[in-house]
Length: 255
Image (cartoon, rainbow, N blue to C red; front, side, top):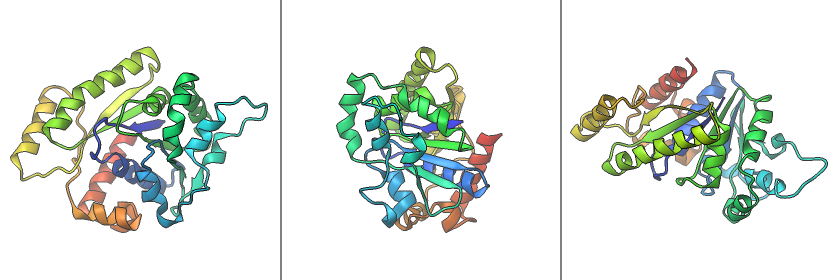
C-alpha cells in the first residue's frame, strides 16, 4: 500500500511526516521503504545523515534506466539502500532528478514508477513516498502508482488556499489514471493548541467535511533536533508528545 505524502506548498512537513511514519512502521516490525522523489533530498538527509554519498544508488538511477530499453532490466530493489534503522530502507533522492524531468516527460515514462511499486510491494509491507512541492512529473507518477495520499497542512491562510486546488488535482488523477487512489486524510502539522487561528481553521475544515486526521501534530523544537541528528522521533525520544501523536496517527492509518 504505497502512501504518497504531498502538498504543493513547501515547508509544511512532508519529509518529516514521511520519515517519521516510516520509522514507526519499521519499529513495529514492518519491512518499510521510503522513496525520496524530491531533488532537495530532505528525506534522504534525514534517514542517512553523514552516510549519504554521491555514488550511492538512487531514484534518479531508476528513472534514467527507464529511458533506454534493455533485455535485462535492473530490478527496482537495486536502487535501494539500507538505512541505520532496522527494517527501514530508502531509495535516495539525487539532484539529477532535475535534469531528468524534461526527458521523462517527453518520453512519456509516467507509468514506470507504478510498475516498480508493484515489484517493490513483493518485498516491503509499507512504502512511503516523499514528493517535491510541485505537481510535476514525479508527483504525478507517485500518485498514479499509490493507493493513498496524505496531505500535510500547517494552519495558515496560504496553505488553506492551496488545499482545495490540491485535492482537486488528486481527484483528477484518480479519475483519469488511478481509481484505487484515496485521500487518506489531512495531517495538521505544527498545531498550536493555545492559538485561536489554528483552532478556528481546523474547525472550519472539519465543518466543510474534509478528512482531517487526528491527533494533530504539535509544534516543538524537538523536531529540529531530530533533523539535525538524523534520528526520527521514535528513536530520538519515544515518549515525547510529538512521537506519541505520530504513533497514534500511524496506527490510525493502519486501522
